[in-house]
Amino acid sequence: MSEGLQKLVMFFSDQGKKKKRLIDNKKKNIEYADKEVWNITGGLFPLIPTSNNKSKDEPVRQWSYSPIVQKTQQISSILHWVPVTDKDKLFSCEKFNIKIDLVDFNEEQYNEYLKELDSSWDYEETKYLWDLCQRFDLRFIIIADRYDEKRCRSIEDIKQRFYSVTRRLLEVRNQQNHPLYNYKYDPEYERVRKFELEKFLMRTKETTEQEKNLLDSLKRIEVQIKKEEREHQTLQKMLKEQMNDDNDIDNEEDCVKIVQTIHEQGKKEISNPTESICYLRGKWLNEPLPISEKMNKKLSLVLSELCIPSDFIATEENEQIFEELREQIFNMFNIQKSLKKKEMIKKQLEDKKRKLMEDLNIQDKAPSSPTSSQQKRPNPYVQETQNLEKVNKKVKSQN
Image (cartoon, rainbow, N blue to C red; front, top):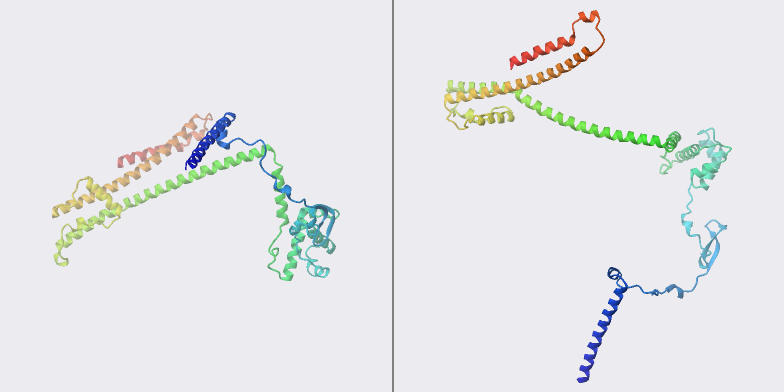
């Protein structure tokens, strides 16, 4: 037991010494590097690289400088490096070498269907174009570059010939599912497009700045137009509300008549009790009038401002006074409406008068002297102002 205890004590003492050594080593290493660097890296990097090159033990592959192998042929003029094991295999990019299946024709079909399409083309040149299209995979820029200079054909002419012949052959063979069946090439549009593009690319710095300024001004104008449209919409909304108010006021005369008829009906029923059943006198007082809801609200608002109770004793005298009060309220609404109209007319006339006076002042300041005929003739502006003053006086007297 004593030997075991001694070993345990020695073990723990050695562990404590190891921990102290590690702490001392850390302190020494921190002295050589900043604390922030030490915390980020977790320690200093070793001076000797610790990674092992695993591929150095692999055997070296044999490579060969061989020609390119295709499905149809072997291109001996172009060589490339490939592993010896892949020397006889197909070229890795052969899967991208896709040939286009053109709609082909023979001389008999050409004479029967294609000869009348364009008289400037013959069978030999059309077949020559087809060979170039097959060779360069319909890359029309390259085809136009490789085209025979003696024939003088532009890219638009080449495209037009190819698409027109293809479309005609598809129509004859009734191949409507072909992608080129519904395609229509417009050479004039293509020429105009290229011309405009070239003109755009040939612009100077001044023209670009001018166009930029024009676009900025256009944006400002559009913003202003939208703002004015919003203001116009709000104004239209306000005018619509005003028209609704005016319509309600226009019906006030009818309201007065309605009140009068209700009152007369009540009197008739009182004078002829045999023609009607028994009813309470306050029946016509508590029920709303057969007018718009807005006018009923305005009427109740005025009655509440006048502190008229809704549940007063409905005697004959009280009922008569209440009906007269309602008639007077509707008459007041009529007067308010007419006053509002008169004020609007007055404002319009004043604006017109102010403009006429401004025109008169401009004419008086003009240096040109009037002729005798002009002096004798009465001034229309003066007459207009006089008429306006008369109208203003009438409006004031009516108010």
